[in-house]
Length: 192
Image (cartoon, rainbow, N blue to C red; front, side, top):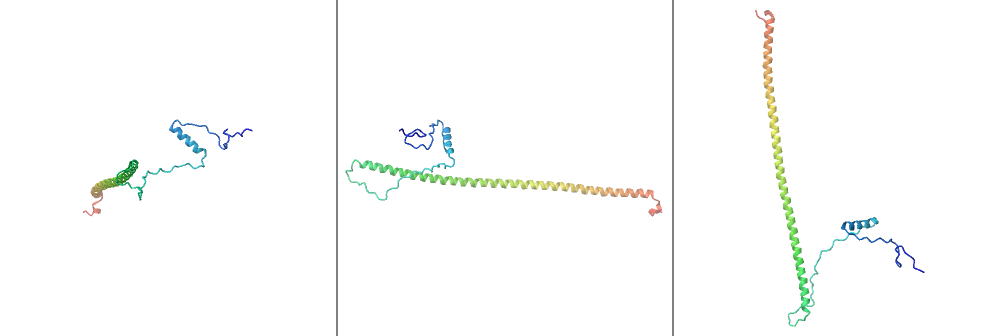
């Protein structure tokens, strides 16, 4: 008897999944499309999010050195390689410490620069705000002075008009009186 045929036609392997055709991505966009399609085949499945890669850290120096190199003559031929390896590791560690200290100083300088820029921008903003307020007050004072001048001018016009009106009224009254005097008999006016 022949082995039972599976869905993927491979004997001895369980056939739970269909065989997917092998597609080779030729462009980065196509590669991204394939990854998205793979993710969207099963939307309930969580997408794998890789952890942030750890920063390289040198191995800590040993607390107790077992094979101390002595200063006696007659060191073996293998001792140089051990020394060279230890020296390389120590140089790596020192370079790493130098880079960390340099990074910290740059971070501190950057934060100081940000603080200085923030203060400078606040000072400029305050200066401009003060200038705007000053201009605003100046405009308001000019507007008030203009309104006062206009109202004063209108007041003067009204007072001069009222004086003129009063003088006109007086003139008209005098004229009426004169007309009344001419029309009325003299005994009414008290003249004899």
